[in-house]
Length: 590
DNA sequence: ATACCTTTGAAGCCT
DNA sequence: AGGCTTCAAAGGTAT
Image (cartoon, rainbow, N blue to C red; front, side, top):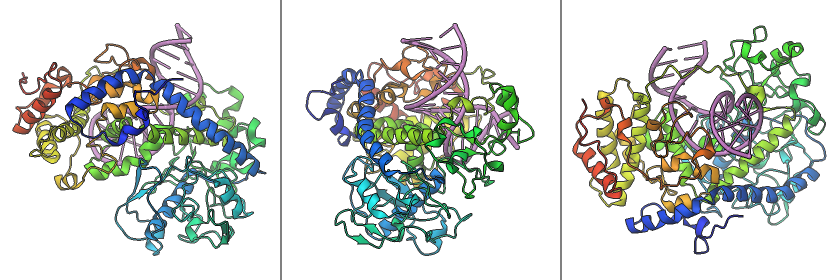
């Protein structure tokens, strides 16, 4: 076990709050700490996982006990999430929600969706709501009890609900809100849901708030899911589904959903008979199931792509044709992304996912250990649930199902598009620098706008359509530290729980895009090592604000004459990295 | 219509 | 065992 020591006691976990903008001296100090600490990140991560596993193990077993029988109709993750999303909104609107026990808990932004429930007046019309949520898994005193107390009703009362403790002890995730109008009328909670819940605190039975009614997989009209979705509390954004279901609405049910989870343990989902097109008997599709046809698979039931057959036994061809596409469970970062994407989009007005993802990646690294731990835990639960739902599933099943075009025809390692994305991130970093150096006169918007203008104009592609500045300008850093703050300070890196995550390339490589000539098979520009695997860079630790951008990798077309802001930004950057001055300003495009 | 881009992490494959 | 590849989400962009 690694010692998170750091000297002072609370080292790892505590410093995420102080991070944002320290004096340089402090930063440097932190940096040095970071170096030694990062070695332990891997251990940290594993410890976190173990920790959570341990914690959850009891709860799992507990849950298992409480889970007398797998509910046949586990519902989709997405639906559940939608439910919870709605629940949160309702609760917040109702003033139930209070500050979280975990200060560091991320805010969930719930965009103003045109949700049926909203429209029916159930929800407040407030445009954007940042909901403070507590870590559901870590703060679940008697969560199981709470659930159990609820009712005999199976589905929604799943025991294992990662309970987000509601301020008034109203389980925020229990709200029963149909998220699919396909099966339910909006705003109409299933009547079969338990009418009564025990107040977790008082233990007094009470009539549940509509939003409390159904925890997980509550949506099946006839039945309810047995296995609660660990991530149900995650707020789906804009109707997203955890396991996205294409607009086509193919809504594939998960075969195993219809069967007892325990019995399913030996049967691969595709081995089990299922309804045509993967529709569950309940009519409710599982989010993890994607119709092959819809999943961009040209091969529908009649036509299988070669790739799909590549690894499948010959005789099973026909069966495979009908095999629903079971998606991989989301990892911690994916969960984080889902949760935070909307927020980032709202803050920076970036639209392209590639750019957004860069920012998210950086923010991910800037998360505190606890915060990341939450997601790791969720991811673990997710995998656990997934394995329960699809016992026979293997990640290999999805191999080759996605047509991937070879990238080898892209010899240029510095595609303009990439450069532009990188630039956006760079600019965000620079804005942070300005703030750090107390250079208020230059705002992010200015930087971004001017810089991107310069770049965009000279760029061949129309890259990121950066903002109508207003929005960006209007978007202050989040309380937790928006992406504008994101460049994690060393302390943040230190605090990063997830070793792999934390040590993974990007901490040392804020602008990795420009350094990735070929997808994952690139050489780290700092180390010269291939960074294809997450572990390959684990030994490197650099503060996120790390290094000057390797401008050699920037396309010359991007190097337009520097604007004053450019110069200021670069100067600022240089100030922090005196030994490696940026050359952008001086480099002339030939 | 669909692959690409981009991120991290998990899992599978390959040597 | 270690390194590499694939896929998970997302949505604008490119082909």
